[in-house]
Length: 134
Image (cartoon, rainbow, N blue to C red; front, top):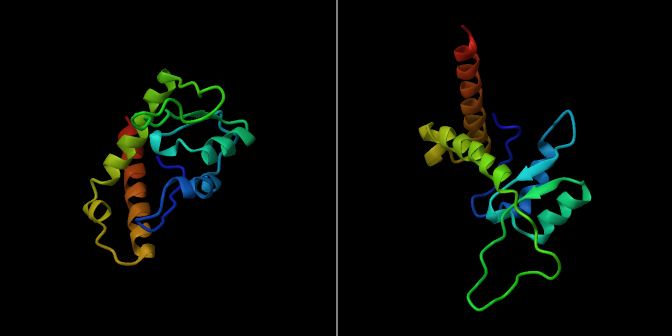
């Protein structure tokens, strides 16, 4: 289940909205780690996580041809076993896109699109609650 939904314009960078999206998540305790894809490999994201003592499980972006290293200092270590758990996010996006109106974005207004995303999440939550019963 998604912990929060943050909607932006289609051409906005996800990295620029990382802090705002994390601020929406209400958790009973501080997370130990954040697992993200290569798109979030930015100094800004890693510094924000480091300030909060949250471990970043983010692989480094690939280097352009002819370049030796992206940053100075010790390279970040990737915990491959933890990174494999990122498939839960991919599955979440996949079942959200099962809803045709979410996948193709028929809605013109951001508020109505956000309502459809929330409705899809509620429908998934109810489906999971019903299937758990004996």
